[in-house]
Length: 469
Image (cartoon, rainbow, N blue to C red; front, side, top):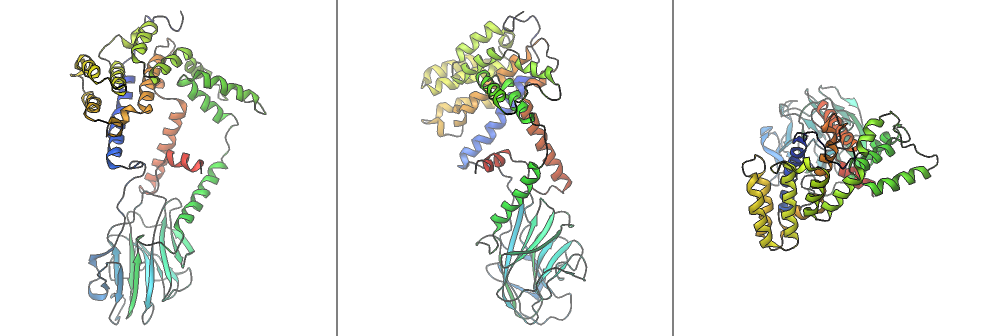
């Protein structure tokens, strides 16, 4: 029996179609909000509140005075003992879902004794003590240059600082360390043994001491971008020093081309592989030739259907599937048929055939009205009619090439599922490359979870963008 002949087997469960509908639904929420916000990266980075000022509500009482700008701190009185420190935290914790957090203080006046400190404390910290004198806190002190971590005896750390100096405190979430700077130079770092959210904290403790705080509203003296770049380079060196089999990446890319039916590209890729020195074997090292052969199933036919969808020819897509794989379109209320009908509607809008699109939508969408999860996507499609220029609207993503790709991917997975030798239809949904990326993402999230949910998440776009620079 040929690959394109009608199969006697029953159609696979519509979980494949539902899987791609879920992707579409998520894309709808993400891309429409991105369009309305007017930003290209609204969902690329995790949004967190960052400190912008000193907290004037929760402070050490009358021992210190916060300026009207909430960015300066003075100690106007004589100190009497170790419990009359003028301590102020930032108005929110340091953001944690990033590579590095950093802030600075500039010493305007060192006062009588220069007992100024910069550091990090928790919400439970007693705001009458120097940062580092109490548990769950860390502080770099100006009078002796010592680093204090949870007790009154400091460790030799760096030089003292005084009037005219700018001192910074930061958190490197990749290495799980606090680090401190003086006048733009890193003094040193120490393991971040304080768990949970921490607040940037400033302290003064002798008469006429005065500091100003920079939470990023002004350029830092320290070159934070260079520091971040250096840390990313260190991470990249570790990755590049990891040994992998010579043909591993080749096999992963090849399986991706097979899975999605890119026949011509696959041929060129194999020719290039044979021309490398030494030649790269097309047989996976782990001997997983069965999955390899599964991905080769109906390669030419899948390529043909993908081309039809990407060119916007949905009518011919339906007729081709009806001829080659009728079981895929025999249920007219299936998720895959819904996606194809929606794409037909979108193509009519793209071609300016609005009246025809309205008639088509009325005749085809009505059959899906009782199926859960479809109505919001139908509304997205119908919303295209409301705009003179729908491409620039919140539903303009429907007119993008990525939407055609999504529909083509869904149909491609359905064709793969018709393979009589297929034992697990879930493998049709994703290529090996995508499974690998999901695994890497899961590993990053697990690592961050073990670090108290602190540090960067895995951002594929960030890695791809950095590789092009």
